[in-house]
Length: 165
Image (cartoon, rainbow, N blue to C red; front, side, top):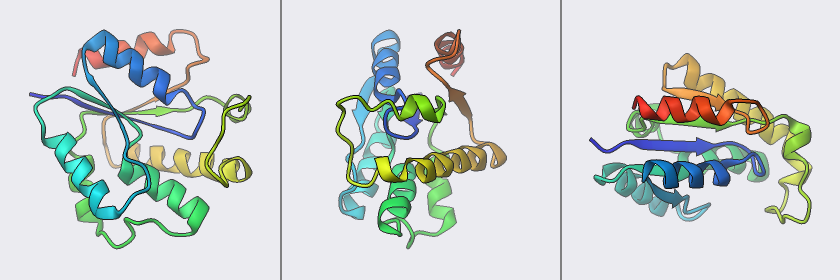
């Protein structure tokens, strides 16, 4: 059975680095989200990637990212028109969610990295929305772990969790 891992979290939280490490070490296909495109394209993307027979690690996932960045930066999500049952049916197809969650000071060390308009100005709100999304996944009993790349043994615990999928 193909395994699907979704890595999510604010910009500059270590998602891409972690996704690449998992991809290399566990021979998963690395998939970067299609971004904030037409909702039909996002739905097709998720369905195609969750239905294929490959082990996949997602660097971002449209239904999560759009629900946070859409609300934080535009005031609405392209998934607002979907009912909770549909959202659950997508999330239930994921074997493991990894929330990249270093502290806010670490996230805000942007350096020369460019960010989408509005991200830097709204990072406190975005971080809080991610924290709430993580809490929601926990409460609804989805397989989710929290990862902080600055913590000792954080990567080791993630790798151990993947081995038992």
